Amino acid sequence: MRDRFSIQLEYYKNLAEETLDSVFSAFNIPNELNNAMRYSVFAGGKRLRPSLCYAVWEMLGGDLSKTSPNCPIRILGASIELIHTYSLIHDDLPCMDDDDFRRGKPSNHKMFGEAMAILAGDALLNLAYENLFSLCKNNPFESQNIIKAAELIANCAGATGMVAGQTLDMNSNNSNDKKQLKEIHSLKTGMLIRASVLCGAFLHDISQECFERLDEFAKDFGILFQITDDLLDECGEEANLGKTTGKDKASGKLTYVSVFGVEVAKSKANNTAHSAKERIAGFENSEFLARLVDETLTRIK
Amino acid sequence: MRDRFSIQLEYYKNLAEETLDSVFSAFNIPNELNNAMRYSVFAGGKRLRPSLCYAVWEMLGGDLSKTSPNCPIRILGASIELIHTYSLIHDDLPCMDDDDFRRGKPSNHKMFGEAMAILAGDALLNLAYENLFSLCKNNPFESQNIIKAAELIANCAGATGMVAGQTLDMNSNNSNDKKQLKEIHSLKTGMLIRASVLCGAFLHDISQECFERLDEFAKDFGILFQITDDLLDECGEEANLGKTTGKDKASGKLTYVSVFGVEVAKSKANNTAHSAKERIAGFENSEFLARLVDETLTRIK
Image (cartoon, rainbow over all chains, first blue to last red; front, side):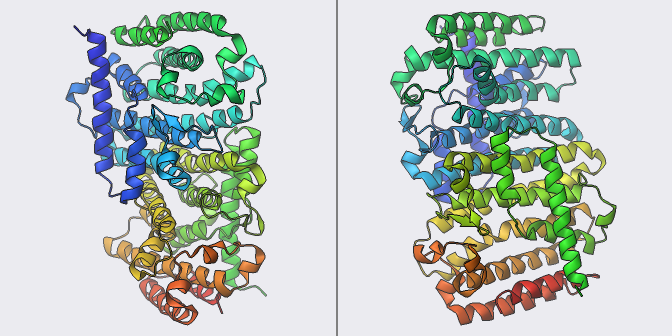
């Protein structure tokens, strides 16, 4: 029998899928562009970021069963997923990581060509913001909270967030710099996870202290996710499923494994998971998030 | 002696430059990314789009001499310029138009490499929206009007606007289809011009009828701009200044010249300029915009 956690995780994933589908149906996008955009958005992602967003929002008192696809929390989560997807498409390009496969399928540029992949990425990034502005317009009484959440998402995605991390990653040149490793990943992976955790909090009026605890949780979760991702690329099963072509390893990019080795990286993952759970232990109804931490850790076991 | 029009045009250009500079100084962007972003933003563009935006706003009663760089109209205009700049960087890439020069200087990827050019473009698009959300947050009493303007900008830039036009353009394949020509350019060039003209109008409470006249003016202006741009590429002086490398012509892309020939294109430019001026003739203080139409037309004479 599937447990409560698995059912809830699948529920969040399904809500994200439904919301993303409804987002696309609201726009009359030219066929070829639409196909390229949808190909990557509906390529079987786990929807971790919207799930985090939804889980935090419910932990703080929200109830997703009462929401429709166009309500604030659902659009916020879906917009982060659109931004995440654009970043994967651009990351996979030949001049970037040059990955031929993503989630076991040909990457976007292998299917549609490089030019279309660039445009599909651009369009997905833009689509995220089109939805966020539309959300602000359609919810005038909540608009100040939504604007704060949307601004956070944009800050986490951009030139001082994820794109900054992609730039540093691209220029990391096989050094062995621990500080740089942390900086790259806290920006490249960590920032969108931070946006996912915190943007739901903006829709509730929580105290500054609670907000800061969630922010610390988000940082820990981001690091945990990156360490376990690096470990999976090195020795896990997902790599065999075409998750990456292993070019990261060949290109000498900075990873937790390349810098610390497998055993120290595993120990760091354990410690970070422990810390993440402590950050949220004081919240009521934090069981789902604590279990999500455990499941993220045990991906590597 | 320089005339009033030239002085006002330069004033708008300077305001746009000052606003863009202030936008960058508000973010602590990693050096290499910052350099690549600034290289294209401050590459000597005419600032046509923010100038249009500022001119419409002043025609409707605004006074830019009373504004600071972070006021709504100035950020709206600067954001459109950031979006325009990102689109040029991505358009110039080898897999897109493959242009080595832009405004007489090496294009972004020739200076910084393809990966950095993609990231700089992504970051500029994102930066536009970071500024727009920040603007909404900092101006709560005007936020509903700003949100409407920002949503319009996002819609004009994205998968049903400029990016749709780029996609259709990429796939146009040297056909001679007049309807397709108009559709491509009304999206690819016309939509950001439309956003420039209309977003200033959202900050004033104008009637639906005035709004529609401005919308028609924007459409005419966009077509006029595109026809004269195509004529300049074919036979004008700007081409010799490295504005393009002439690859458009070689690649057989759809242009007003390729479809209609030089003489008919010139005649269409004349008619469109006439129509544009009629659309705004009923507005008080429309002299600047009428003269801008004339100057755009006489680029080709």
